Image (cartoon, rainbow, N blue to C red; front, top):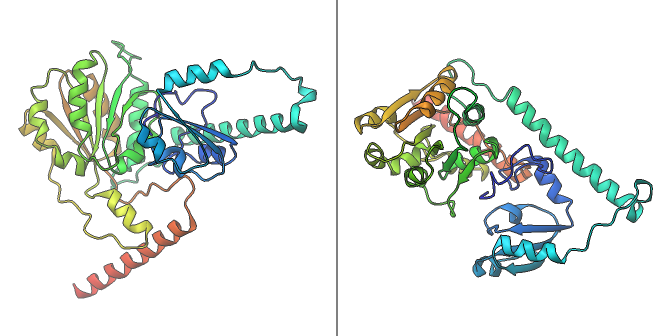
Length: 356
């Protein structure tokens, strides 16, 4: 996940984001790989939760990460830049093989065909989500995936008109917001993630600290309503910060990651709801420009206005709490658990309705 944004999604060798929260094209590619080179990947995600019997070469400057390695392979201690320089110096020069005399009985040609097929799969996903996506129905909250896709389009259009802006910096909070951004916001920005998936409330303080160090570049904090609830006091500091940031709140009224984890284990949602007020009004009370967005037509204009402004702005985007971030390849156990949870939730709703 921390490597998201190192390569543009338009890179010819990119087949998507890896991991259960990434893209199916990347998942299927790694299932077939022989050797996997992991550069600074922790044991919580990335190559470590992808099936397959690849030989793992793990590069890390943290000895503890190398000690936690459980896959078959080797660990290389050092920084990524220095280790890659040493590995490249030891590689044999490439051998040119004529198309009619491929080594290994056409094995190389088969691998190239597979890579092209996975690249085409990722390309189709990108075109499909860019062209349609999940557009919210009238009167319904905005799906988080739609919010990310709209943000992608707005960021891609920066500098097309008027003053050109630098490459955006996006800090991402912990929760389902992390998964939506990882999957649906392209690698054409500089991301700042937490080193732990338990550090809620990271995004806004991180953005306030980074903004003065990135003059002329848009700095955004993408945060869930649980995360903003932890760090609401920071809005008072944001009103007097030396550089502006744009805070986008995924306001779905729930600790959605907890809800999702309960349901995929077969349990009905329990005590994950949040009693949120109007975050935009609170931001204005702190001296920060606050805008509440409740329908999709407002979303793109509000994002453009916030990025074009010269002051800190908070967008309180009311999101759909029921959109599910299915893994790249859900297991039968996860699917069965989710269906069981929905049945239990329906039964609980019927009993509540009868008592009422």
